[in-house]
Image: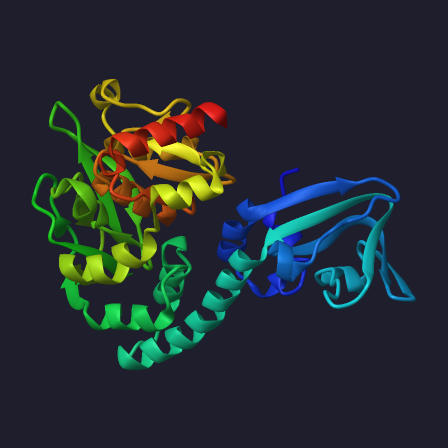
Length: 356
């Protein structure tokens, strides 16, 4: 069952979150159906899940106390609570639909939403801002969910303010990349050349959006020209600060031991190498999207899946994971890439795939 963000808004504390945060969480939601009399086994502390009653009625037995909760009633707006230290049972009364949400993800988003409000206010004072809408938009990008507000404050202190003119090119196609940029005011167009030398508009960017990170991540050169459509203001973050404050905290690496402990089936595997490289070594069943095609083909990926991104050395997969997480996808990276596995590690991984 596909869940809409407006349905999540009916539950507490999800109703305190803006639509951007709910859009991120909606891909972490699972719905299970229970038949009449069936026991619903869960304990938030043990299962790591927050559970809501979506449809039907449940019978909650805690010791000698019995309570009925029906969907739509005020009590169903809150997570179903089962005391861990008492004899408690939850039974379906008729057919019941329960909504299961990863508690850690929910806590992550709630914490970030609350701390970012404080951070937004503090930063507004530091930068002498009268309009913080661009900052609020920026802070709601999924890219920043894994970074603490305090860390982001350090990042902003390292940015350089630039007043830009209409028609000014902030980055130019094929130039070496040395920084990324955050739009505070104004609009910009992202232009890419075709083989005939003409330009085509790939995207229009506005306040609270960023660009230039792709060149820093992998190619070293700009893959597009970004030109101001209006006068405006942008903030420039140098390559070294980008690596420190954004790339390093966002990308999560997993070694072979951690992967084998969870099982290879825990992830959907994504190979971002070139097609020619697959003849040397490939994993059965892995998706293949070369890094240079990821921007266009990332729409094919399922946001309900968690991806293990890999390449030969880990460099390209790190770049890919960063970009995908910026679009709300959940990713891990094979630490060190295929080369780091060695002959024995490669053999172990193949055996795991064969048995999964």
